[in-house]
Amino acid sequence: MDFAAARKVMVDSQVRVNDVTDRSLQAALLAVERERFCAPDRAFSAYAEVEPEIVPGRRLMLPRDLSKLLMATDARTGETALVLAGPYAAAVLARVGLTVTAQESDAAVFDVVGEPLAEAGVTAVTAPLSTPHGSGWDLIVSEAACPVRPQAWLDALRVGGRAVLVERSGPVGKAVLYVRGAEGLSRRELFDATPQVLAELMPEPTFAL
Image 1: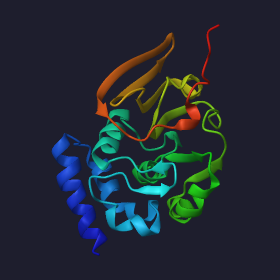
Image 2 (image 1 turned 45 degrees about the horizontal axis):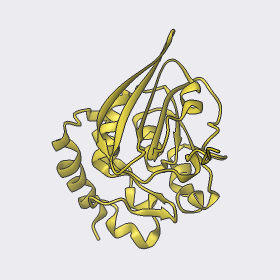
Image 3 (image 1 turned 120 degrees about the vertical axis):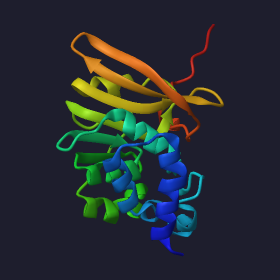
């Protein structure tokens, strides 16, 4: 399979046509080998309009949705980014020129994507996704959906920092942009999306007596 040709088709047919006009982001998507960020036996589907599996319980986000999310961050060279459950997004941001840390709770993900992440200069951290690594981030990004507002993630942003993620508690979720200001957070809904939900962020069930 000609992955380079498939990559160009992906950018032309799934990214540019969906109002993703940032040239540096387009160039990064053309450069990063998406097929290396999914399970080897799913590489053939890396550029289709599907969510290929990395390991059981973790999938790549649709190229259309991820590119729109990343454009909404207005990412700038030299900024720092924490990417939770999103190794491909981490590599794309690194290609744009950010200093990136990828956090996963399942070390098996890094068994699949560790090599291309290291080549991209991304730092890999294995830790529960409910607790973000570090603080003072310029950007926080996730390719998976959050069943509830991930307040701990938002608290890890610096003033002026942005977070993009999908909040999904039902069949269809909302991609949202959070911006931390000096007096708190602003929230803006971007588009509908249905990525896989992070089960480990599900709140504990409560029972009324």
